[in-house]
Image (cartoon, rainbow, N blue to C red; front, side, top):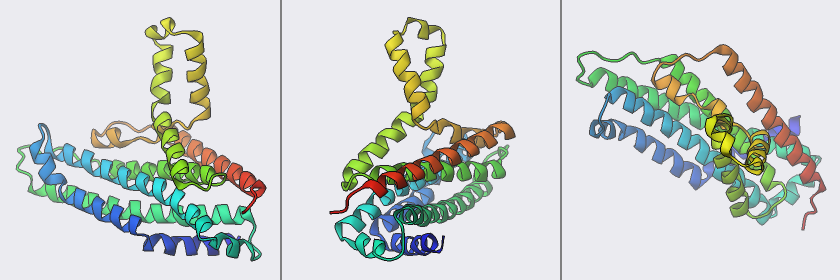
Length: 269
């Protein structure tokens, strides 16, 4: 446990020093600053558009960090052979995977919290300064909850990236595979709804079988997407939230255990 925590701390500090991290954070803050101007150009309620842009920025920031940092740092350890120095100490490969994940998840969590805070500040500013006859109700608590589930989704994607990094030395390949899982995970729920609908009766059994397999194998990321519900102040049933939380936690833990098993069998060259 101590070994994992120590490695998580080292990974966190290393992540803060990465240029990719700094670039993503600067981009996020600039995008939030520009959200008011972008909302002015849109047709519709400027406050809702600002919230949409704010949550989209939070999601983009968290996912970019999960994609790039998750695949880059582990590949960097292998390229520079610093992983050998780590594993030569009384640190098991399982501790390495969980420590790496812990540090990166903390990095994503801190970044998500900072961008969320800035998003709330900018939304509040435009809410107070926008010239509206009837300012809309802003569900501040739901915006924070949506950001929390964005972090949950990014943490799951981070586990996916570490899973692929556990058996490939190519950061580009791991990034491509992680992106593929993300894209499929975003659409599996809609595909299943389509198959269960009237038009699904015309679909071939082979296509239905592939769709069902993808639904059960790939993560259903739509469960963690609360952005629209937060912006439009829609109900968020506690049962659905608990189900999504447990689902993401269980899937993440499964991926980390699988990554540990694969990494233990991997031969270091």
